[in-house]
Image: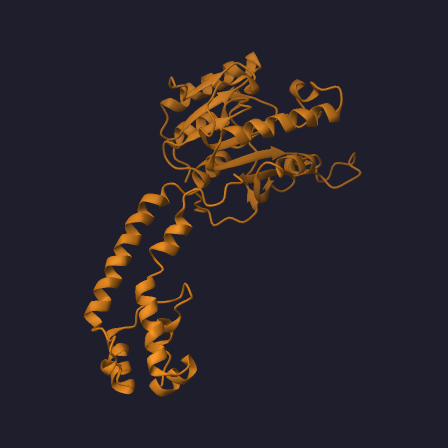
Length: 337
């Protein structure tokens, strides 16, 4: 496929010709339906709008990599409808709240309001429905299970002829306990000191299958090295998630309505929030897909965080604004975190 990355296209997202599973991260800020901006009033009814949401969800499912992440924006009143649709196609990780700041736009004391002032939007965070596409769990079972060593200690306990509690009592401590957890992920090899105590207390060196500690330790280190090598290879295939902000489900980023006026858009999201999402859920050089590019926040943020992007924006006015913003990002090195 010809390289289409780091460009925004002046076409409908649904007209893309991208291959299946190409996007490591999708950040979608779609029309919310009759909130603000001409693009929010393109449907005759809410039912028609939801039909398009279903189409968008299906297309995102086709394009998202098995270890990818999808962020889908929505307002607090309509996000539930979108979630019902997306839950059919993805695995919901979080229903995030973007908190725009206290007294957002000075509405808290507005006499015209007959309900509490809005200061949040929602971000649905999804992963693919694929379970463990890396096979890492299988590797844990096959390699890190240390079956030969586990079986050795299982047979050793049979030779000793005591239950785990009685072994602890005889030794006067619980330091050998994990060595007899042969069916648990908590299994571990005992220390040389503890193994020698087993020899002294239970005469295990007289057992026909007895092995010297050096032999056990050597096999343990060999299996551990094999596992860590495979883990390193497969770690890159896992869905990335780095909560470097130590955040919870409420993301507090002030709105940027008064900032970057040269990149004006009625629903522009904060660059800092966008860059935080990108850093959290992708790796350098990953492909970020932006189905509704608007003024180019997500596209520019991808470049600034060393990711590739592909964006779509059908409105010529915002397409032009987005390209200006992207051009500026190409020569910028500003770090936010």
